[in-house]
Length: 229
Image 1: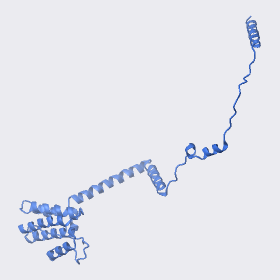
Image 2 (image 1 turned 90 degrees about the vertical axis):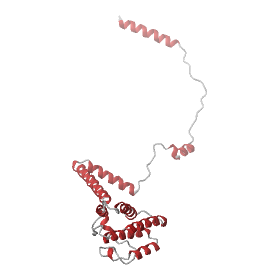
Image 3 (image 1 turned 45 degrees about the horizontal axis):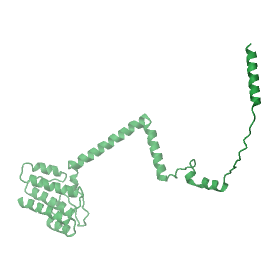
Image 4 (image 1 turned 180 degrees about the horizontal axis):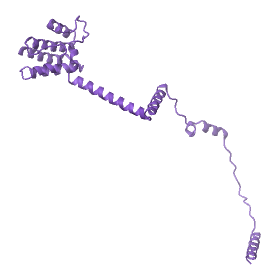
């Protein structure tokens, strides 16, 4: 029964469609085409080359750092490399801390009597020189040459010599400025000499520039200290 119903339904559908008129689209069409010349112009324009971007060539220096960090990454990716890297950082931190303590504590001041100031004056400050240099002449010559940094250094050495001559300190080649300040602890000279030591260290070891006016102020402080001795 069911196939008969389907057949009848299809028959009527076909009859209905056969009665409809077939209509064709007769509207006028406007055919268009691309301008090959303009198309090539757009192709050559970099602003329209979305899929043709090229990174600028890398310099030799850039390639070196790429290689360097790639090597570092490979080393750190291994257990041994990571341990070595941490050990290296720890060693560097210890060295930096040691150098900082070395400078702050004054341990490097032994070089005060060893280093040649490079003035061409024909002498270097040694354990014999501190008792034989004509400081007044050397200081005057440094001032004439506008070498105020050296002049401050010579003034400080002269003060050390005067302290040693009066047996207020026990001068030795390898002793630090802090050691001399400790020897003066409780004395009337200690506060003043502490200030002069700071002036000297900032100027000589800090390599701070000093003008003629600034030097004159420091020079007067040394003169006042020497008069008190």
